[in-house]
Amino acid sequence: MSGRRAERQLRGHCAPEVFGGLWTLMAVAPEEPPRLLSLHVSEPTDGVAEVCCSYRRSRRVAAMACRLQGIDGRWRMTDLQVG
Image 1: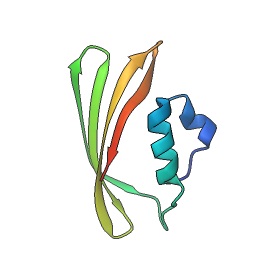
Image 2: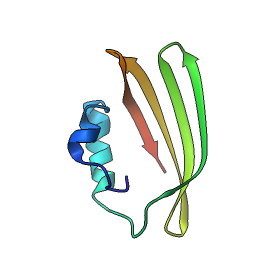
Image 3: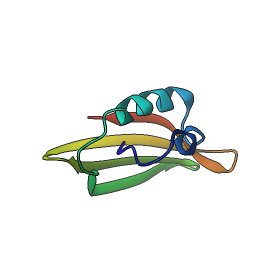
Image 4: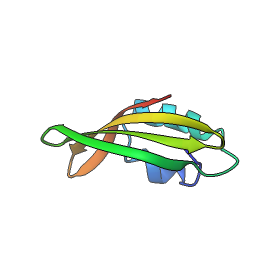
């Protein structure tokens, strides 16, 4: 979301519908890089990770949650919510 990674680096790690939304968020680059405040990871079932975090972007604090699934030997983001 900070715009520091190239599109080709992210595309393979995201489901197409997630990548489309992520690319839209990346279009608005912040004045300074976001800073991670907290991170929580759970594994509801084998091969699935649910991650939530809070981060500071400029003067605002925001939250993000995503679901990662192990597909073909690598992690792929299959759901993303940013608020």
